Image (tube, rainbow, N blue to C red; front, side, top):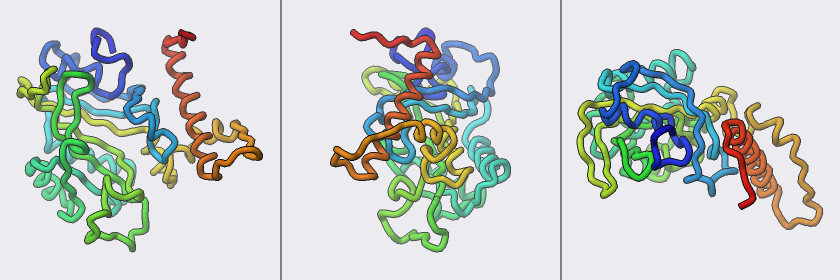
Length: 266
C-alpha cells in the first residue's frame, strides 16, 4: 500500500485505510465500500485445500467514526439473507469471547444463542495488518454446507472453525484500538467498522460448491493442467491438490505481474 512501509503487498481490504482508522488522515467519506485485490502469504501452506488462496478479492464496507456494531451486524444479516438469499438456518456466528455486546446484538436480530460461538484471539481478534496498526474484536459469519438434518450442537468438535462443513464468508471487525510495535493497545479516537467478504468463497456458496476450485474462477485453469501420474506415487487426492496449487499460484502471479510486480531471478 502507498505510504505504508510495514507491508510489501496489500493483504486485506482495510490495509490502505489504516491512516483513516487511526485519525491521521481524513477519509473522503465516512462510509466506503470496496472490491480490493489482496495477496496474502500467511496461509500459503494451506493453499490447495477447499478455501485458501494467496490472491483473492475482498469485498468490504467501512465506517470511519460513523456507524458501528449495531448497524454493521444488521446490514450484514440483511445482505446475506435478503440480497444473496442465503438460508438463515445455515448461518452461524462467531464472536470474541469477551464481546457480550456483539452477542446481544445478534440475539436482538433474532439469531438463536446456539448459533453463536465464542472464540479467542486466534479466531476473533483481527489485526493489525503489519507490525502495528488498527485492530479490534471481530464477529464472523460462517455458512454451513452440510445436511440440515445433521446439526450437531451438542458435539464440542462441531461448529464454525471446528468442522469442515463450515466456510467463513463475512468478517465484521470492530476496529477500536491501535496496537503499537510493543503490542500495546490504545483506543482509537473513534470507533470504526472494517468488513471483509471473500469473493471466491461467496461464489462457491452461491454455486453450491464446497470448494472455490470448483467455481468458474478456477475450472478452466484446472482443466488446462495436465499431470502425468504414471510414474508418481501420489494419490488422486494429492494430485488434485497439486493441480490446485499450480492453478492458484499461476493466477496469483498473473495478477502480481499485471500490477507491475515483475519477478527476477535473484
